[in-house]
Image 1 (cartoon, rainbow over the protein chains, first blue to last red):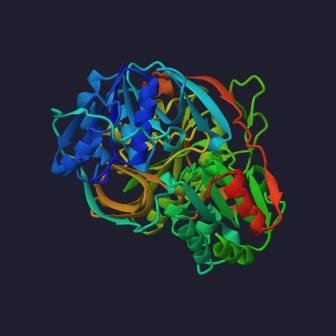
Image 2: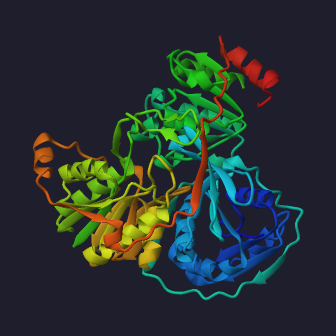
Image 3: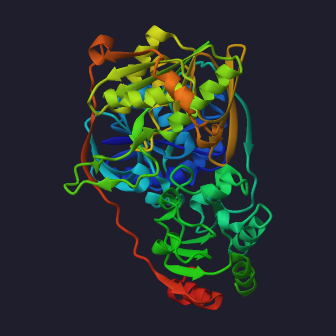
Length: 309
Length: 249
């Protein structure tokens, strides 16, 4: 058994979701290599070499790979696939974009967003927005899998000393061109890897009132999330949405402010360590899953919390 | 310019799914079924592109038993021109669905193929990317904005941490994210008109497709319920619990 993990990075560091994929690879068993593709990736490759348990770090450094577009990356991975029984990616938007293209090029099916490894062929994954858990078995000789980051603890990225080797693969052409990216700039921790998340819902009331949520988050060193209702109401941009159709989070502490607890929101945060709900409606479904509920007006509760933390 | 839009019949998104007591699958008997919400957004986007004069024809394709004609008719009521139902009662893998769609498009030769980014039943998020791979064309996934001109599509994609805009040459596959548009309601006269729009049925044999699902569903369980906690009476009590009992702040 041999696994190839496709690393996701920002040009500097390996992303946390890839470290979770490393943990899943260790659970599958056998040895595993990490593939780092991109443009000017020597710094990333050396930080990848420190990830515990990685056998080899393979690199493909090519200007065409800079934006990690699936049309360029998938054919490169296919050229290396014959040496492996498993190919793992984090279930980020990059992994979700790339993995099915790799699988189809290799003529195999793909397993999406696994949450547990039973054995090398058998996995658990959530279906129906987390309302059911399926155990599935793949008989493909090559298994292409995306791994839910919150379901596997990130591997330690310090103690390893893997060899770094340039892989031999040809980068082809594709009818796609990167135009631009608009990344949200924030000093706050990333939503999917933060220890504490404070999320606001429609009950927060307005875009201006959402400042109180940001203030509480900053006081706690937390990331800020939102329910779909808050996104749809225009309080916050859509990349802050927590839920089955947004981000899946599992922080140590999740504070839901003015969120009623729609099924699809709960699917995105129910694996959090401790859940706190603040809502004026005592019948809100969020209280059924919260460890600590506080019924009341969030416009009074949030300032009080801020002053007492 | 022709577009293919693929649609899937799934459990209605407002219905809470139940797991069968023998844990073999979920129980869909007597459950309300609808068009997958992401597919509905795909249909709406195609209709808007047609209204803007970019597209001339929208072909909607669904794969399944005869009951999925309901979703094809619904897509027609929103504005699709004609439908193709690929008849099968088998449970197809994403790769098989992509193979069927690629085969249908060999005949149709659409330049734009729009799919939902995922179906809300299996939550796979695979078919569009697989279809693009099999056709060897670009994929613009998780689209929140689509502009088509001069044989190219400029697509803004929802990615982790923000947005990414790419330009793909047509033909290309586009998959839709939630905020691409808000689908219109199907008005009654449109629903009546849709009944008269052409809909053809094809079999897998006619398309020359042999199924090869390599993923076996072993069991389905209800996830562990999270036990409810307690209601605290004040901010002070909440902070006390978080500090000394839960020890998270």
